[in-house]
Length: 393
Length: 237
Image (cartoon, rainbow over all chains, first blue to last red; front, side):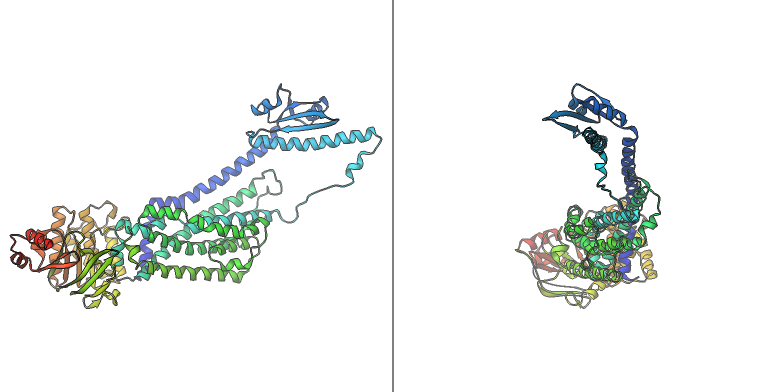
C-alpha cells in the first residue's frame, strides 16, 4: 500500500473508532443543531402569536377619553394606585400615563427593563394605537375649527416589498452560513487536530513513526489529508444540518411576517448553494487542517494543543471583519475575495447563494487553497525534522 | 553493521556526546551501557535519523545517517525506551501499519507476524491496544520494529518495567535476532542481561566511551568481581 494512503487509512480508522470524535463530529451536528434551531424558532413564533392573540394589559392613569379609546380597541385596562409599581410587579404588561403639561397632552408609555418579549410587544402595539388616537384627537380639533380632516390623506407614506420573498431567505442563509462556515470549517474538530501531532508525542508513537522507512513528507501529507477529510466531513455535516434546518424554519415559521410564512422547498432556496457549500467546506478544511497540524505538532502534549487549537477561531476574526460590510449591505463580496485563502470559502458560499458568483474564480479559489495547503504540508515535513519540535515534551 | 566514528552532539550547554566511536557486528549483540544521561539514547536517536549529529559519522548497514536517511531507516528496526502503540488499533493493525509504511507486501508481513506471534506467545493481536499491559505492548513494539526484516535492530532498554515472563520473551526475541545474523544494538541498565546476551559491550559516560570489551574482558581488565562493580569503576574514572 502507498505509504500516504497507509497513513490516511490509519488516521481515519483511529478517528472513527473514537467515541468523542463521533459524538462531536456527527451526532451533535446531526441532532443537536436542528433541535436547537427549531426550538428557537418555535419559541419566537409562539411568543409572537401569543402576544397578538391574547392581547395585553395596560396599567393606566389619565383621562376617561383615552381610557374609553383603549377599551374600545380591545385593550385590557387596569387602574392601579401606582402605574410604575404595577409594571414592575408585572401585574400589567405595560404602563400608560397621560398628563396635561402647559396645555399639551403628554402620554408616556412605561416599560420595565425586565418585561421581556411580551412587554416589548405590548409597548409596540400600544404605540401604534396611540398614533391612531393622536390622529383622532387632531381630527376632532380640526372639526371643531370647521376644517376638513382629510388633511391627513394629503401625503400617504407606504412601504412595499418587491420581488420574491425567497430572496430574503437566501440572503439570510448566505449571510449566516458564510460566517458559520468560517467559524466551524477552519477550526475543525479540535480533538482530531490534537491527536495527529501532540497525540503522537504523548503516546510515545512519534519517534517509532519517524524511524520508519517512510519519509517525513509522506507522513505529513498522509496526516494532513486525513485531518482535511475528517474536518471536511464534520464541517459538511454541521453546516448542512444547520442550513437545511434554518431554511426550513425561515420558510415555515411566520414570525409575524406573512410574506415569509409560506412553505417552499429548501432546494428552491438553495439552488446551486449546495455545491458551493461543499467547495467552501473543502477550501476551509484543507487550509485549516494544515494549520491545526502545525500547531498540534509543535505542542508539548494534547492538553497544550487543545489550548492553542481552541484559540484558532480568533484567526478568522480579521477575515470576518473584511467581508462584514458586504454581508450587512447585502452586496456581492468583491472578486479579490476569491484570491485570499480562508476568506474565499465564505466568498464562494455567499456569492453563489445570493446569485453573484463568478464561476471561473471558484476554481481559482480552490487552486489557491490547495497550493497554500501543500506549501504548509512541506513546511510541516520540515517541522517534523526539527529536534526542537520532535523532542519538545 | 553499525559504525560510529567521532560522533558529537550538544544540546544548549550540555555536551551529550563528545566524540563517540563504536562498531556493532552482524550476528552479535552489542551492549550499550552507561548511567542516565550518558548519551545512549542520543546515540540511538542519531542512528535512527531522529536527531542530527553536530560532527562525526554514523553508518547503518553501510548507509550514512546524514545523507542516506531513507536507506538507513529501511535497514534498521528501533524500539525506543518509551515506545507507545496506537491505542485504538489492534496489535496486528499496529504492526501492519508499520509494514505498510515500510512497503512490505501484506503476505510477507503476515508471515512475519505469524512467526513472531508464536515466538513471543502473542494471542492478543486482534484486541485493541488500549487494554494492553506493558509486557503485551512491548511484544507488539518488538514485532512492529522488525516487520520489515531489517538487518540492524536497535533496542533501548527493552525490558525496563516488564514482569519476568515478558522479560524472558524479550530476551528470546533478542537471541532469535542474533541467530538470524542481525546486528543487535542493546541499550540497558541490567547487568545480568548484559552478561546473558551481549557479545561485546561499550560503557558510555559523559558522552564518551569509558570502557569497551567483552563482558568477561571488562571484568578482568578492571579487576572487578562482577559486571556491576566493573561498571561503577568505569563510570567513576
